[in-house]
Length: 493
Image 1: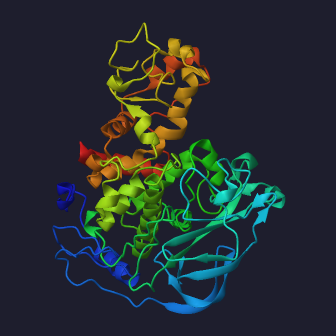
Image 2 (image 1 turned 90 degrees about the horizontal axis):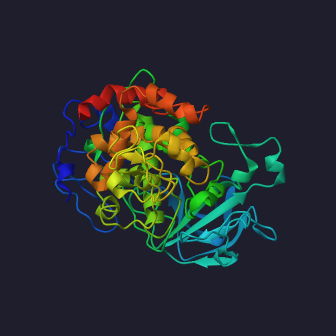
Image 3 (image 1 turned 60 degrees about the vertical axis):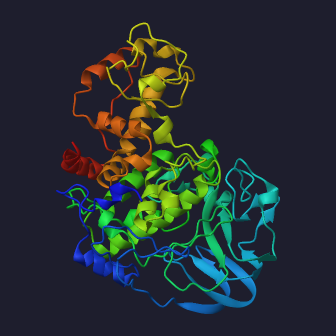
C-alpha cells in the first residue's frame, strides 16, 4: 500500500474530507460515505475488502427485461428480451450471452460508416474508413452473438449534411471538417450475471472487464477547497464527461476519432478540461454536481486506464484521470500504472518536460552553457525528443531546429500545452500523487511556467528573431484555474 495515501489531511491547511452535505449527496447518488479510516479501501468484483470502513451502504439495482436498448441516438435490437440495467454513469449492461440482431443507425460498408467494434484493441479502428488505422476486419457484423465480458462500441458517423454550417464542439465552436468524422459513440456491456451493486462500467478496451463498485470511495483523499471568485458552473464539465471518449488510436489521427458530441476535439482543450475538472471535484461546489462529476471523471479514468494498458492509444489524454480513478477506488492495478511502467501509451506531459541531462538533440548551442536552457531554466519543454528540442538553444539559433524552427516550437509551448497542465499539477500535488505520476520534471516544469518572474525581457529577445511571438508565460488557461493556483499553490511551497 502506498504510504502517502495514509496522510488523510494531505496539506493540513486546505485538505480534508468533503463537507457533510457532499457526503449526503454521495449517499443519495449511490456512493458510500467515507469514515475516518487510515487504510484506504477498494470495493470491486475482484474481492477486495473494506478495511475497517464499516458496513458499506448498498442499493437495489434497477433491472428489467428488454428486447432493445437505446443511448445517444444508437439502438441495439435483441432477438428476445434479456435482463438489463444501468451502470453508475448511465451506460447500459445486458446479461449474456445475447444476440444482437441489428443496430440503428445501420452500418454501411461502402463507404464504411456507423461502425461497431467489440473489445477494441488500441492501434486499430473499424468505425469509419475516413479515419486512420482503419481495419475492416475489426468491424463487427450483425446479427452478432456476444458472450459475457464483451464491450460493444457503436458509433454514428458524420455525413455530408452534418458538415453544412459546420460541426460544433461541446462549447459551440466550429470544428474543421478535416478534424472530425464521428458524431457520437455508445458502449453496451455484456455481463455474466445481473449487476448486484452500483458499479462503474468496465473499460471498453481489451478482454478484461473488472467491475469497480462505488459503495465505498476514498472521499477523504479529495482536497476540499473553498471556491475562488471565478469558479464556473460545472455544466460544461459534466456534459463533457457524460459519454464515452474514443481514444484507442495514436498520433494526430485520433483527433478524427473523437466524437464531436462526446468529447473535446483538440488536445489543448482536453488538457484544459481535465485541469478544470480536477479543481472542480476538489472544490466545494454544489454537492450533487460535485459527486456526479466525480463519478464521470472516475469512469473516464477507468476507460483511459483500459486503453493505455492495452496498447498505444491517444497521447492527447493525460495521466491525471487514471491516477484519480486509481486512488479514489483504491485500485492498485490502476494507480501503479506508471510506477509499474504498465502504460503502453506515451504521455505528452512526460516526453515534453525534461531535465537537460535527458536531452536528445544532436544540435548543440554555441551560446548557451550545457545543463540549462537559454533563460537559465533547469527544467525544459520540447515538442518531441530529439532535434525538435529548442530551449537549450538561444533564439538566434532556433533556425537550426527542423520543421518550422524553434519559434514554432515556442509558440506551441505557450499556446497549446503548458497553460493547460496547471490545474492537474496543482490537484495532483494536493492529493500527493507525485510519486505515482513517476515524472518529477512535469511538476518542476509547471512550477517554472507559473513562476511570477517577469518573462518580458525574454519575450523581447524572442521577438528580435520572431516578431509575431507573444508570450503567455504564467497563464493557466482560464481565470478559474489561474485564481485557484494563485490562492492554493502557496500551500505547496
